[in-house]
Length: 223
Image (tube, rainbow, N blue to C red; front, side, top):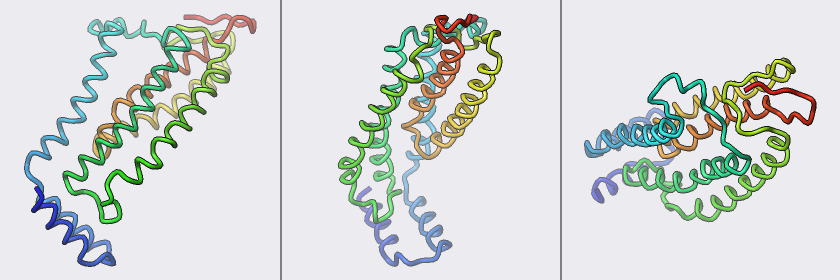
């Protein structure tokens, strides 16, 4: 592997001002140096990660019986909601490190990224923590402030139809984005798959929670 890495570094470092067609050719040459195990690894890794998360969800909601799909609920409390969101977000940090290790092993990194984990370890964790803290505060005191949990994932409030439509469309667009991220990460960033799958569940849960808002505001939420 060190020989392969050395050869590919040489291909990269010959000239950094190549036209894009030449760079594509060099990338193909580097891919040809990989051992066959990487193809199996890149196919198996996203399958294992996705199946593991989906299996936990299946056991949690007893989805071996498809009829139970209509009874799937949001997390039971704001605390559980925020804990799941925190785990999903913070999991991106080790996922990024694992992805960098894989790409370095496969020699996918270009010369400017050959410094390894240095820059990521300096700027990555603080950025993740700041975004996490802001998201938790906004989620707890703004988004989830007046919701009733747990709620059926497919609940619909017949009293405030416009509110239902607004949140359903908004969360639906976000859910579509997450579906695209799941498809993208399957190929480009497989270690992040658990985060995006949990994010999709939390998006559906957010819609249900915002529809199932507090009765103290004079609304009746139907579960």
